[in-house]
Image 1: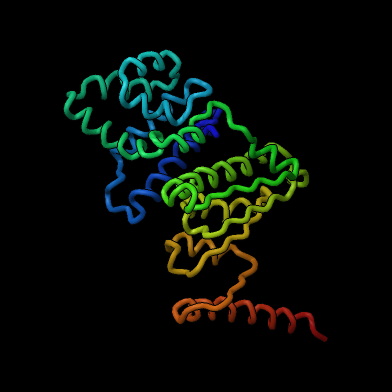
Image 2 (image 1 turned 30 degrees about the vertical axis):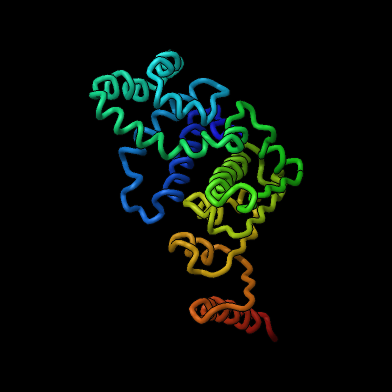
Length: 272
């Protein structure tokens, strides 16, 4: 799977934004400053530089941060003047000590996924073995096993956080066909709090018109960040709950009361 599979400028920036969201989710979920503007700036320019050459992968993002000669090879392909100036003006005039400090810190966040052979074989492919848009439009079934017991918790979360934005991008790409021609596609996500970034909130609030439907499950409400929780309960049409704790029961009673009230009101309006 090629995480950087993008052709248009909009797609490239969409991919970049989602990778940054992934990094926040993995390393700085509470926005404490571990991942910040400096990190974002470096990663964004590195990714946009690498994506200037079709077929480049996440592995090349690591290399572009470590190999100045590789940067020189890529720069002739970079058409965005702001991205070019990042390397020719900012990085070129940064002292080696500070350059190493910035780039090495960034590399340390990606290295654990690239140095793992299993993960490198998954995310280091220049061409993805499946087309998410084709799967949606042709009614195919894709089953992704992200068992933490087989690949480890961090790798499992990483792959899940990659796939969710790709599904969203494929769904939003349906804007180029009439709504009546968009085939419904159902996304089932267990333990979805592990993959719930801002992108997930976008799916819940905007993807319906692209015929992307979600069924999500988790253990308790406290696993969700507030913005995700608001997106879930503000958009879902059906809530199913089983045995819950006191805290969740207090929260859910208001959701079910609201549903019951709406049903009674509707019945009163339609009655004789």
